[in-house]
Amino acid sequence: MTNNTFSPINHYKYPESDYNKPWGWWETTGVSTMPSYHGGYAHCDKQISIHAGVSLSVQKHFWREEYWQITKGRVVVFIGETLDTMKEYHLSAGQKIHIPVGSWHFIKNIGKDKAIFLERQVGVLLDERDIVRAGDSRGFDEQAIKSHEILVKETGLHAFWPPAYAHKIFPTDAPDHFFPPQSENNSTTR
Image (tube, rainbow, N blue to C red; front, side, top):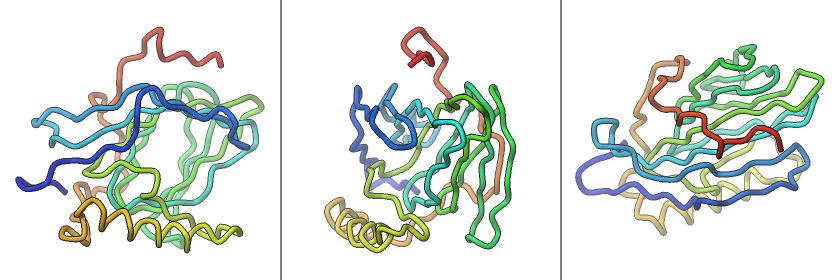
């Protein structure tokens, strides 16, 4: 995904949060660039909470992969190269999963209490506009595609289209070094 003429772009900020989502809340816990021996990609760490019985939208990203570590609760994660090939993975606290670049995915809280997970986004471009949702009744997927086209032009990524995905292994356990250590700042009591 990277080459010598392009520097990773990270539009996330720390601190940044939204505690008023209908499904729960999210907050950034760190934003930086990975060391060159890990590819030099941009990364954003988030902590995400999902209400009991709720799922996030089915979505994919063109420029980033994600690593999730469940820290509280029980969830089912669906991942597939296409919507028809999505497989489910049941996870609980302490377990991890990798979401490859360009893969459709979503997560559902199957517990009776909130579920919390850490997400590390890794890629050449980290931006909220790098998201396409499947079957969104609001028509967000079409809107997202238009927004993404503008993003690609603004950042100069059109010269790198289509992205050369960093990982073609599907799916994998997330490497431990891609997760930030738990600290007092990464509270799960909200």
